[in-house]
Image 1 (cartoon, one colour):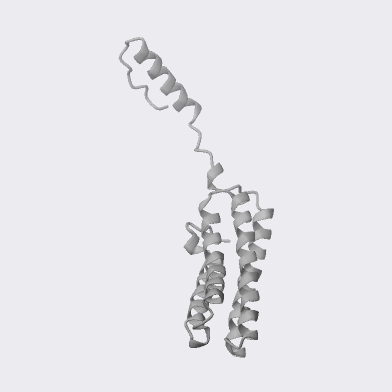
Image 2 (tube, rainbow, N blue to C red):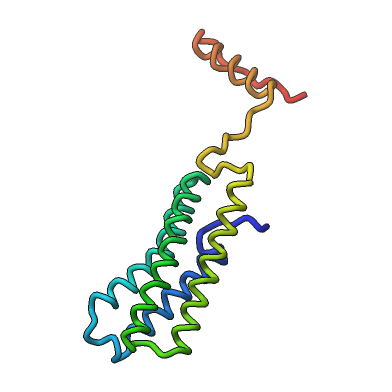
Length: 161
């Protein structure tokens, strides 16, 4: 698996972004024009998927990332539930319903797989990376120079072996 440098590199984030776009396109239709609360709820659930992936990634800890991925997965379920409400009210046709529900299921499945991958990973996240250690020689040189400076002795360059 390639290392993601940013949340935008994550395929699941890209798919979640596609889900948001499709939900917004769907809810701009005249069928939804009077049901402001359903439009708001459906859009907020879709945006929540995208936002939780992003926030979890940016936390720098796999434990927190997994927690946010679970929230994103729950929001995928909420998108699907709201789509059923829209379908039952006649706001969405069968083709759009199946397409967006399928995308939400795909994103939810990807999130589940990603969660399982991270649970099995030994990586803890960038928050826990330790800086590289200096060699014994480098540390000794720094200590010697600091002691000489404290004693008022001009430090001299010690050649590298």
